[in-house]
Length: 261
Image 1 (cartoon, rainbow, N blue to C red):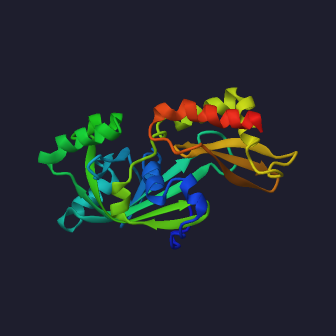
Image 2 (spheres, one colour):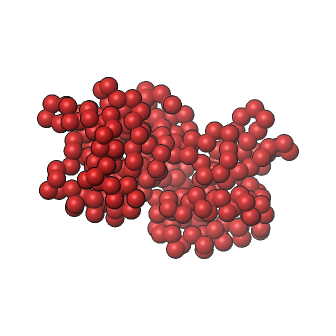
Image 3 (cartoon, one colour):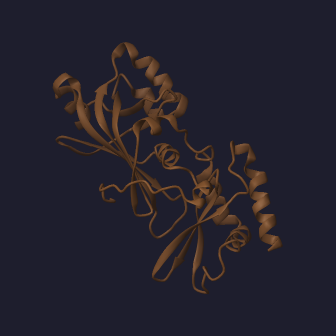
């Protein structure tokens, strides 16, 4: 796990327009399924599912008879300080597969019975997970009221204001990124070579291996793996995308530019 010691967000740089901001990236990482929760007396309890609803509620599905649900029931006013850790793993094999981690800390409370149905529907709008079918039986729905959001990525941790986090939207390619990168790695070595050709001269050595690491509305992320380390670098689109329907044309532009060069 990366250190929780945070660093101030860096100032604006020219290349910042070629990558998502911290709040958008944090919301995108929040869509990933791998998540655990810690609280007083509870270490690494599993989450059956989690989401951030369109209305900005952080909702958790946990086993009704699990440690966290029991700790919430026993807490004063059923209000328990907790920390949720969401991990973002690369969808293709790389040496260090964790691309980012997101810490969401605050207070966990049960969703009231009279509000449970509406909360389940709001949950399903953003993540139609099968665990929702068990809410009210073997699973319980909890709400996390945010106090702090920290994004860890590329060895740096950045504080993201809870309001900025909730106001941001996940990357529009988040839902198709994994399948697209797996397809690229498995079936299109020629395309990967063209993308690698867009990297600065001398970045890829004779023994280095280039792998597709990420894809978002700003472009591709590639990992150059070397015998003694690696470098992550972006191959940007001509302009940021606003929806997934623009992906094909954007990739075509990048590949045409690579062929010309």
